[in-house]
Image (cartoon, rainbow, N blue to C red; front, side, top):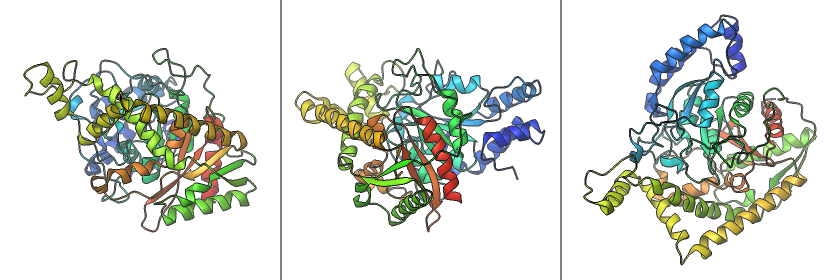
Length: 478
């Protein structure tokens, strides 16, 4: 049986010691991909390409000329462009579309010798919290195959969970890395908005979208962020701030911290009893270890989800206007003129959830409702950001559950999509405020389902966040 590596450091030690090879690693992951194909985590596997690159990398490892990610076999979410490879955002409207350029994230991964083994299933155009909205069918959670893996980066999370790759890159708009990380028992990091370039990421909501890693350790999340972060001439929203050596500076001794938890979380409707107990236990453990852990009021908790959905749906309606059956992608064979090309191509090419969000987004941007919905939501976003920043000036971190419950049954969102939207209640605060947050696996509940807790900190405070996450992960194990 192949070794179950937790960190890239372990892999590289075995590579240097001659105990394994990159080719052997890739072959092991390919075996797992075939074994767990029924989980539907991958939309496409780059088998021959990955094996060829592994052979080339093994030769270079012998000469000592490899990059920092040598030995890391990684998967990318199917909304991240990779030159010469298909990218569909799990949508029929982009079926068989081949990218003519690579995203900045992919270029930086390849430059450090990561091997990309395939593209992962996701909610269509990253719209969803269950990975059930994919044209290629739902992804199943390895912990319980009757349950969702979370979304929208569900395929990426399951690929890491099931050992089909060592790490994966997802995107997070309102929790799309962190929630699946929580449901699948892995580490999920949403960087500060602008910390990582969005160039080559198929847009959902441009003022929210942010790529980030899903890993089995905080150590690897730190290294991947270090590699993919930084200024980019192709993305004007990418920060010009220098990138700290997150991985090199990683330490588990962080000193005593001030940590806030939100009073309103405990009053939140739908908060699972075991999730609540897990949060209370973490609070007591941190207090016992000498940290200051105090309740704070966040009076906007009930407003974060509606604010988030109004704004993201508005941005989606604008971003997805380019998929019109004319420029590229799916064109309806039933179209007879320009108008029917637009109508039929979009009606047939987009899934139900995407169409719902486009229509709602168009509605809130329309002349009669712009001020009542979109403009008001922008004002509330400012209030949420200011209150979040105010808390983070007084405290080092905010501690919450990542999700209000463990992974739920496949098919539930078809009954009531609003219930699924409310799964984002604890993750969208960081997205609205543009600050970084990390989901850490804590324990399994009584049914064996993973539970995660979330730490949030001030903008561009990833170094401190990753250090404390390392300590916190150790505290939970002790």
